[in-house]
Amino acid sequence: MEMENANPLVAAKSVFLSSKNPLDGLLQIVKMGFAGRGFLKHAAFSGHFTTEGINNKEAKIKIAEARRIAQQYGKEVASSIPVYLHANPFMELTPILGPNGERWKPTHSVLPFSKVLKHDNDFESLMLEYKDKMEQHGVAMNRMFSFIDSNAFLYEPTFLWKDAQTIYHKKVYPLNLDDVPVHDANPQGMELVYEIKQRIEDMCVANGAIHFQIGKDYPYLKTRTKETRNFLCALKKQLDPKNLINPGALGFDETI
Image 1 (tube, one colour):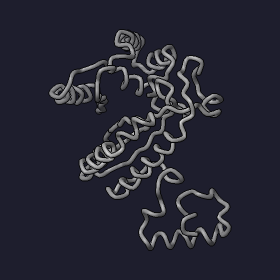
Image 2 (tube, rainbow, N blue to C red; image 1 turned 45 degrees about the vertical axis):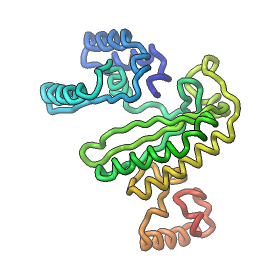
Image 3 (spheres, rainbow, N blue to C red; image 1 turned 30 degrees about the horizontal axis):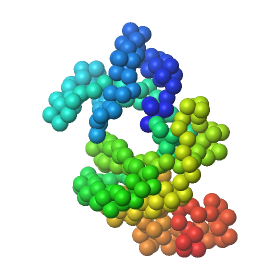
Image 4 (tube, rainbow, N blue to C red; image 1 turned 90 degrees about the vertical axis):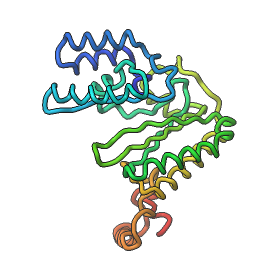
């Protein structure tokens, strides 16, 4: 998504500056140019791999093994996405629109490996349940997966739905919106997005998932033990008896 929305010249500059030498930078830019942006157009899924090592030799051995395994299940494509993300690991936090002007809403959960298959089966069942409604209201979903070292599995469903741009997009979005498709307001689509998101949240809790961002968008208080909840509520009442500090966050409004 980030790469699709990136200015090609800015992307090329960032890749060149992050390369190990000028020749390597030019080669990377040429490879990305030949690959273009449509190399995944007909792919249902794609996997992108990076490796680390104490030296180049170890990193190359690891990527060769990843390539050997992956080639058993698919076809190798250009490495444009990992190259771009390596050059831009901390991208600007801006409102995001989809490639066709859709509203975009990311979600995520961090799962123990033992729960990944069950969680994925639950998610597939949920998508099947809502398939007709999603098609009716112009709502689609894609998913991104990644490993967090050998500790956990990052499961990221993201919503795309046709809806009107907000003033926030128009004021803050980094690209010129004149060339971005415009959609009519879609309140029923947005309502459906939040309904499905709540179902995904419940599913995450049931499967023991945690989240990187807690607060208004992800549950906190209701996933604590009874003893921890009692302690936190007592602390909140003592320090903020009128619930003036960040009301609605962490789930305190449901208990105070």
